[in-house]
Image (cartoon, rainbow, N blue to C red):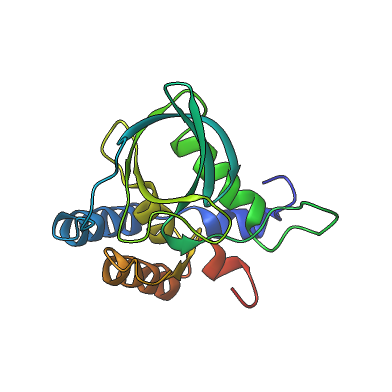
Length: 177
């Protein structure tokens, strides 16, 4: 986050009350929002974080690109395009939650793959943290419902609404998230 001003950086630090509220929301909403369909190979090792909402994983000898369901993080710079506001921060946060070498649990919803061939999944870290929900709650993502995958849509929308009203993450930094 070296390109973020000190004033903005101060606004990114959530208060203890905000973190407690976010944790409570994740616990309450996530407890009753299990995705309807489980994956064929539920565990995989993260080998690379592509950006805030895409990770590369390995399960056995098979490598897959995983698109985190229900959220959309700002884009990082690639293919000659500039990074979107908060794209690098979202990517860094995903890297901090599930760095390479982390074994994650993958849970798919109804549709297994997107138009780019990526596996669509809810990703849970070894400590039980749902990465999709955490990124939404901390203000690193906007909701993105990819039909017919709506298993956690209500939960994600509620977490994003809370982050937006609290002005955390991209909601307190970017002009038009």
